[in-house]
Amino acid sequence: MAGKWDCNGRDGKSMAIRTFMDYRPGGTFYHIANVAVGDRRGRVDGSVAVRGTWSRNHGALTETVSSARKRSP
Image (cartoon, rainbow, N blue to C red; front, side, top):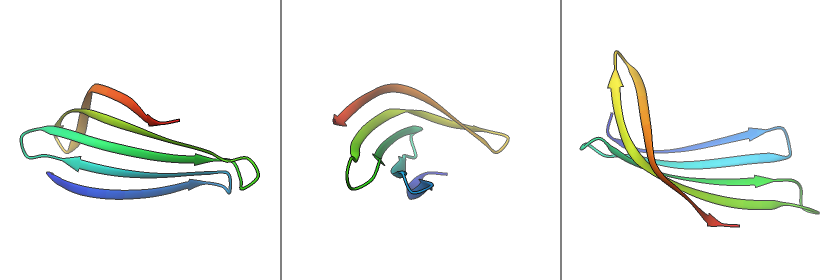
């Protein structure tokens, strides 16, 4: 399960998200989520960093968040 992933997603034309996920072998994780909402006339961008621990139980991933902070407005 340990490794790094980049995920991209969209919700129509008005919202896009890109997440960088790093699951470390010791059971900790670090994610950065970049979100853009709106259009070129009124777009809002934001970034959030999240840290915590992860575990697997019968194939299901469980994350426990220990901190989350805004990286940009």
